[in-house]
Image (cartoon, rainbow, N blue to C red):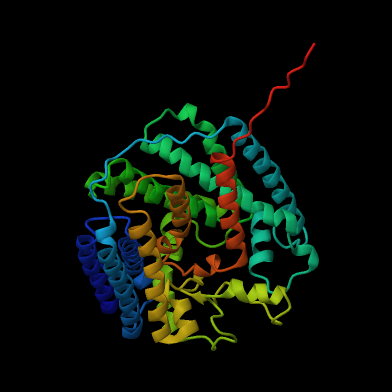
Length: 443
């Protein structure tokens, strides 16, 4: 327990230092990573007796090293680009308007796609009569099985069409946040902008996961903060009022997360503390178990980080084997188990301690560069909207860093298609102008 307390103490110390050097920017990448790690470590401490934890010095030191490097790079990057930021730009209100016919067209397409996804999920779930919950059945068959029959794959066209729902959900969530939460426009005039995000949530739950629901919640929080800063000319310092709102938002998200446990057919304990402990706190202990009892070495380079890349090569016939993104399961006690190991496990398993340090530095720099150079101190433009949406979508990596490293979700061909689709849909919604010429008939 003493090593866990030391870990918590270092995390709090790093938070205080970073909070000063980031000028009280609560959404800076390093600050958010430290906040989620502090939360996870506290949850782990609450379960020390239940899980019979004996935390190793090595696990504690590796986590401290990773956090220190991520924070140091964020602070240094901010310092390098600080001179480029216009700290005195005037705030502005900018309402985003999308033609009703375009919104109607997007909603129509989304509804059709969600229906087709539901049909595919039911079909695939029906190939295994063992499960009673079709959403859980689909999840297990498609995500946890290394050997699937041809009838257990989703139709390729439908699978790709799902990206339309995802992209539209995030674009319209951005628009609603800007108009209603930041610029205080009436909800009833922006109510249609809530439909694509709602359809995204429905589609996500149909597929038996909560990933895009949580990603959307994180996206809304970071976008809300960035747009609010833009409106106020980047003069806002984090206040206790904002911290309370942020804390309330997190509590609501956690309650909803717990409530979906039964709906999605997940087994195990379903009370609030147990669910949150098994997801938010277990990763700290699983990392400790991983350090004490590591698995066999990887079969290929970057097997856990570049899972998506290797699986694409497998589909192209270049390599003979595909790999699951999920790591091995470990027991916390006689009942609870999990397979999440914090942000640092995949890098450590794939590249060793030195490689983990390099990959942590690279990841931190990418986030810090996007935030401090491309977003902070800027005004809202069309190009900036694209950058904020892309950054907000990626920010889930930081928000989930105390639980798992999900960089592998962003290193595949699918994410490239999704980015291209984002740019195409943004052009259609904001740049495409269709004019109708009147035909003049002579008598």
